[in-house]
Length: 279
Image 1 (cartoon, helix red, strand yellow):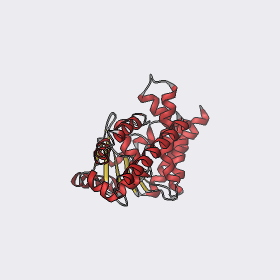
Image 2 (image 1 turned 180 degrees about the vertical axis):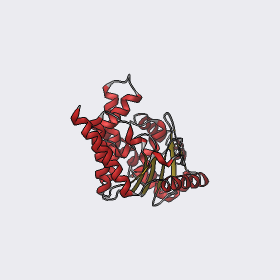
Image 3 (image 1 turned 30 degrees about the vertical axis):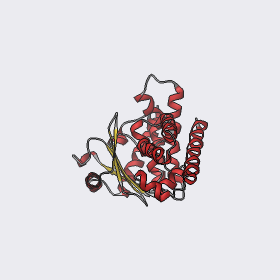
Image 4 (image 1 turned 90 degrees about the vertical axis):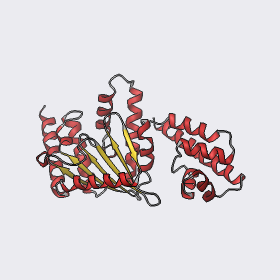
């Protein structure tokens, strides 16, 4: 499955090279092309370096400006259709690799960036019980690939607030759950992520109806992403993003301290490990 992912990246790099070649042949700068297709010149540079992937409407406008007869739209559609991510999540997966800060609230499951392979496989199969093994492998591989941003030297600040419900459902069984929580605890101890927990005793809290993610960027406005079981929404309206940021602030206020949260995670992991060794 890694081969498929590398092939997609190579295709996006070809896309970027073609964009640069045709832009330069037309005698247009990145800044001018960006102005004419309603993005920044920096975005055009990121398209050309295959760092950021253009949306369909941007690809259509690029075709109009460069008079490329739909080339960039067709290629963009083909590459998007081969993405391992659900349509509503594709842009989010691309943006998180560019974020300087990510704040996330997860009410029911461990967030994808923190999942182990066993945990990711279990939740994928639970949601898709009739799919072939190749489908499951692709989803798990893609999810683990996303997590590599936490190992990069330029990794974003990653703040995660989990509800205690996340700890109490033994996804994959006691051994898999113990390994998953130990993984989260290790990342917290390594300061790769700052984790806080909302205990069940906290009662009602903001953002109770689904997960919430906020992303900040060096050269672009912040975005918010909300997700429920079957769909997600990427939000960039400043007023809506501000409301989402306030909701996350309220969630964080209801959470335990990082130290108390880590102790709760490690205690749950120890309980699962003990259960795994006695069954």
